[in-house]
Image (cartoon, rainbow, N blue to C red; front, side, top):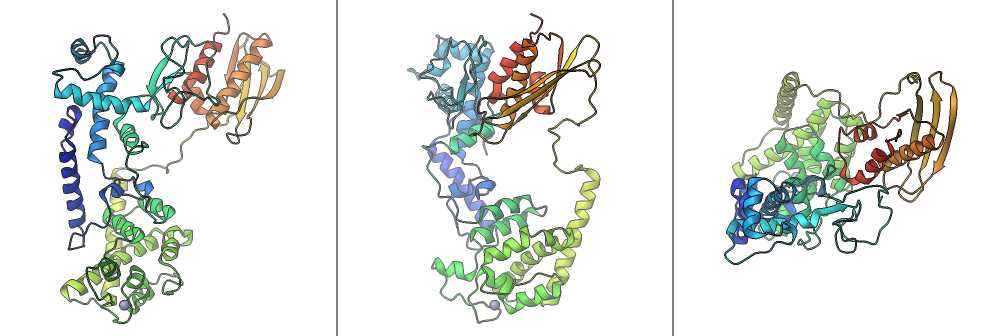
Length: 483
Ligand SMILES: [Zn+2]
């Protein structure tokens, strides 16, 4: 992909389509399917894996997302050399958001303006003193895409002194090509792609499986109905006879081929896996796949699970040798191949683990470890607070307790306040209330202690969260306890 050129030039639509075409051709031809049949529209494959696609890139949208990055730089770094040169030539009023194409504009500038238009769609203002934001025109509501009012419970910081502009689609408020690409392909005007009919739970599950990529793609094809069995080929008027070549009795559907054909049944029995009902033609294919991929009993043993995956793959391979090479593979040999595949795969995994240790799963410590309460230093009090959040339609609760250096109780309370939009906002709200209460009670040297690491990091400026920026600002202002 010509990514470098796409950073500065907007490729003509024709070329984008041509590149998409080449990629599509490569993908479909590279597979088992010999005729190189394109089973789905390219745009459907461009859906993310979560959405049932394969996560290919739509070239034009990706191009715009890259160009948007240049526009973002011009906006955020107006003093860099590139910005000064372009500003001098094309927008001497200094506002890139309203800049237009002029006579004799360079191709690069015209390209950047197209990226700018995408960037504008994902930009959002955080209102401070309202000096640069026009509340009725500028997008400041955190919607998709951001827009001007009518407001819900967007926090407006009572003491903020400046407006701020950020990128709505990233937590930290900074433009990224990935999120801009997502926006470009999810704008209302982007040609709507029919959401695939396949089972979304299964679809999400397959991409998380630890196995060879070819197996994942193979399973995806089964689920999305694009495995080129005789039945699908007949449905598309490519062949006339769809009888299974193995048993010559039934139609060759994916379900028949992988589970119901006597040959497949023999293989499953011989594999020693205790999976019931797979051969029952009355049970839909989807249900069988759910049993295989979502059933805990089976997936708890890695080896069993891998055997299922490789067995499906080998059944398909063996069908292809029969159809295309007229070569029949005995079911015993097939099981031998499967066992060998599984051993090889597991050994490689083990080796990789040794080289790149993955650690203890993906559990993220969002909560700080709950240690014993420790008293504050002499002359200080400590305020422990916590916020409870149920959902967006219920007011959240906040509680706090203040104790001094000896652990003596100095007051506590709880409050019900606004309806925040998330658990994080609930925590921030609790902190603000606790701070106000401590101040009212006359405490000036206070240590605030909460159990949400995210809040602590945000307040201490370790991380940035654009979405709750006005909450954080409020806390920063309230922090000036000693005046
Ligand atoms: Zn058969």
